Length: 99
Image 1: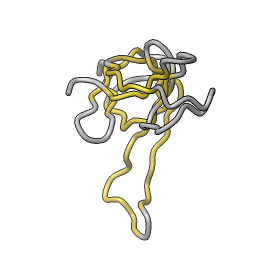
Image 2: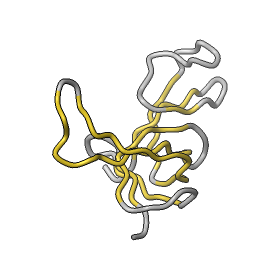
Image 3: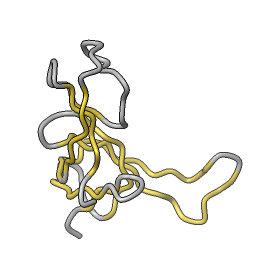
Image 4: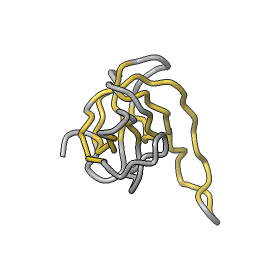
């Protein structure tokens, strides 16, 4: 897969991540999965601890506004605030920007 799988509501157009079994906006179960390959970096942070342990290196995370609507939290690899990023959804989402 070369994007992030996103839930799309055929009733109201809501889009979001992670996958849902009904739409949080209208309650419909008329959902499908669409793939989103790009977005815009909104916020970023670094995580230094995992449950019960310190991480060997901080992990960069970002909130990404998905192209077409919706948001996802993704591991961040190279990019500054407001940058367009490519999304890879093979496993956990990863946002990649130009270094």
